[in-house]
Image: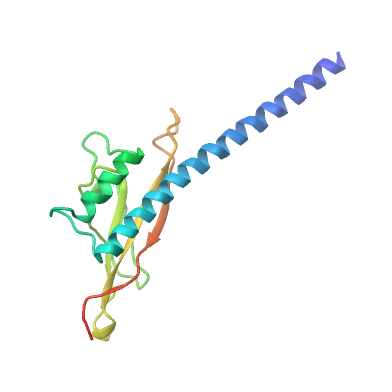
Length: 161
């Protein structure tokens, strides 16, 4: 009888180990997808030196086409990014402006202005912060577990000196 109990204990440990291994694998896949999305958005913004919308071949259009091809999470129902994206502050305490409030996918792009009152105009510019999310589509916790992956662009100077 002792051997049966010991075998059941070892079997339980193996099952727990397999579950942890699968959870780690799923987490790494989700992080990889969110990281790719964030990097692609930053790459497109830096190529245009702005996040453009509403024009042919805009940054938003190219990003959303690419995201659709890799299978990133789509906004469902009437939910738009303005409801999904929290307000954020920049490195200097400035309020970020959400620039992709009507996107089809769940990512956030904020624009920050580095100019403050009395600052040197030659050093003024703007930069963008991008937030993509890791998602886990598990039936009970899928809506509760949303982990952000953040990144920033370089500062683009608007004034040529």
